[in-house]
Image 1 (cartoon, one colour):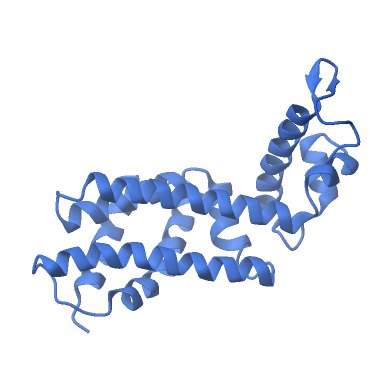
Image 2: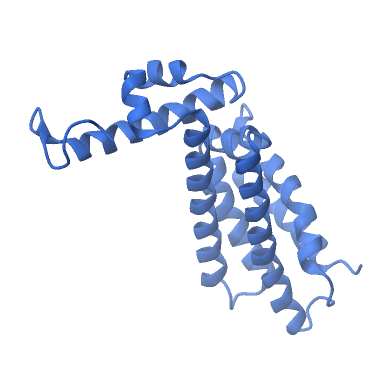
Length: 211
């Protein structure tokens, strides 16, 4: 927190508002720097330079690089979970294939539309720190449960055989992520519809496969 008292103004702007604005700038710059240089090769100085702010201002809102990476990953993961959850709910009555297609489109649009988000969430966050890795593993379980719920609906309707869906879909998460990442950085990018078509077939086939 700044040394300025809460509620005080500076140049006509509340101190809290200025810190929120700086925090957002540091997060945006962290996204750029981590994606460009890699988390291991990044520095607070590089983030500050990109943001056009000082290291003193950085440490007023973040404890270090790991805090920036953790917040970025948490935000990207939360946004994509919400997008996919909404897509699945909206297409719940349209059949499993349609649900998977809609969920895949929502995920790619959330994570892959900005190559920086894809790189940070799928590549740079992996193994960056013990604490973040624990959180990442925890979130994989959440994703696995969401995908398994789709399979369970299909099994209840007799469309696919019953089985251990959570283990099956967990095995697919990494493959899906790297397809999305490769698509996000490809020049030129393949058609989004082509990527969704391929992933939908893979996911539908794997979820429905008999163990």
